Length: 261
Ligand code: ADP
Ligand code: MG
Image (cartoon, rainbow, N blue to C red; front, side, top):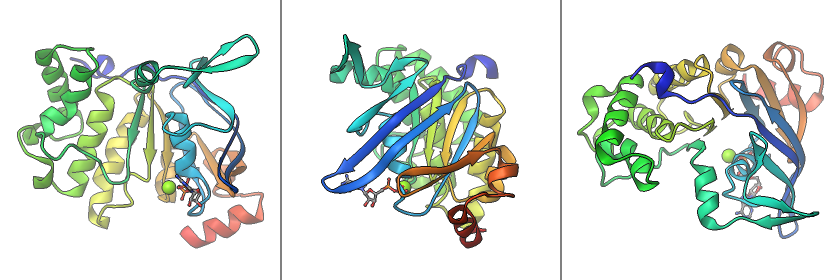
């Protein structure tokens, strides 16, 4: 299979006026964000600013109190019925989620499955591919992330960097229109960060839409089309790295960057 057919065309993600709260705790306070096909968006912000919650809302792991998210124009988790929004069934939400890859900080691989089966699992479970085709796809994806020789290993036999590369291959197996990364390198020993960033960099140039929460500022400068700085559940500023990272307009952005750079 060629690289082009391995990966899907990037989707558009639109976040409209999303508010999320837990009791009295307001976590997202009116977030509007558009990510265009093939764009790489890096989200920066202090701990507790709502970055993970925003990714979880995009994937409908959390439901916003106000606002909505769409993928290529289709509402995530709900649909319009007249003036109202109606909840989708759990099954319909799962189908939508198949179009959104998620890479977690702590890899979240299935410990009892081999690397190959970890990558092949979702296309089989969702009925998209028969087992032999899923295994063939999984082999191609493992080769893409440089782990063709680890197919029969179990996650515990791999380094953190290797596990995260498997997690990325697994996220690609459903050919998602967008992949969300939540601090993909922050659980790794420093010497393993580079191998994961280089796999993400390879995806960044392939036309897949990526939304990446990271504190790796150098990496953001290199690959981001747009950097979004979030604080207190609000987007404080956004723009190309040359503006947000090098000429931030807001005091809060400057303060944050002075701490992480
Ligand atoms: P970040 O990823 O930027 O560090 P999060 O989105 O994880 O921030 O969290 C933002 C805020 O929301 C934090 O104060 C966190 O404690 C709170 N929060 C997140 N998830 C929950 C939850 N399920 N219940 C209550 N509070 C939550
Ligand atoms: Mg987080």
